[in-house]
Amino acid sequence: MKVLGIVAEYNPFHNGHLYHLRTSKTLIGADCVVAVMSGNFTQRGEPAVFDKWARTQMALLCGVDLVIELPAPYAMGSAEYFAYGAVKLLDSLGAVSVLSFGSESGQLESLKQIASIILEEPQDYKAALKEYLCAGNSFPAARQKALSAYLKARQEKDSLSDALSSPNNILAVEYLKALMRLDSIITPQTISRIGNDYRSAELTGEISSATSIRELLATTDWNTAKELLTPSMPLSCLDIIEHEMELGRGPVFPSDFASTILSKLRSMSVDEISALPYMEEGLENRIRVAAEKAGTYDELLDQICTRRYPITRIQRILFSLLIGLTNDSFEAFNGAGGPAYIRILGFNNTGRSLLSAIKGETKLPVITKTADFKNSALANVPEMLSLEARATDQYVLACKSPSMRISGSEFTRTSIYK
Image (cartoon, rainbow, N blue to C red):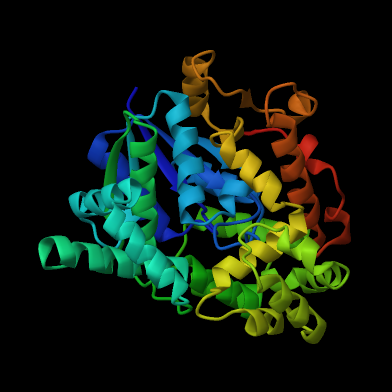
């Protein structure tokens, strides 16, 4: 069985995802597609617009055979942690042949060269990185400048560093780094991204960004939105969205958590804030002052974010606070080498066949019923599941229907079988 691996958020699933999935599957002649997907919180540090179960159904209906959850510490992580956690899960299956990812570049060898330099961290590169960070640049900006300086010093030209200005290229480099770190036998493949920029807030017909879709859902009544989204999304996904809205489970947006986040921040000391992930000295004071002055989520971000502290970093901090992820637990999970388990969100018959084939072969426990592992003696398993449960219990508080806000569902829901 030739198995294709994909890392995704499907937030929500749209035609661009469908293009990547079908193109990748055709290119390698895949018999089975495995997607490692973010749960209820995503890589930008935001809540997913619809919960992981709805998005799992979208994936299964559109051609994915097995959906594995990327645990919250990695799903909400910076590109490096996000990519490593996802690739570690795919690698741990021992059955994935190819990892396919989108990129603006589409040039696999150039991306590999960048990944190799960043992974090996030559002394000249490391010194330049430190210099640019000390100058007040954000980490992504400092890394791009350091790479450019290193290449110019070595080759008298820089034909690579511009790649690090594009979000999908950045993730592509991190996927390649993770494969190198793990000495994985998985073969990488990149597909050139088509359509508008993933951050674009405007629909562009058949291939529109997830950002533009979420923006429309946030600002437009459903009947109008559905008509506008029909060219951009599979009809099965639109049906799932409509069902979720009828049940009052979504859509969910960051601003839905404004009162909770502000309340938590105002009751915390600066020392408690400084114990969150992605912090650095002085930022805790900035956050504390902003929490006293802001009345909305957007105002809070406006008063915290700067060139040095970009919005994605601040959102990761705020939603780590929401779900109870501290820097100590974040470091403990990552120090242990990645996700502690393989949690199955959904599968079809082909996915079930793959699960049967890998049973007993993988070193990580395969979980379809989380309740069975709630008190596991396996390292980090109950701790990571407990964090996931807290994340879900906070996430559901943003549901439009009060009946959907009950806690404890993380230990009662089982894998979806289509």
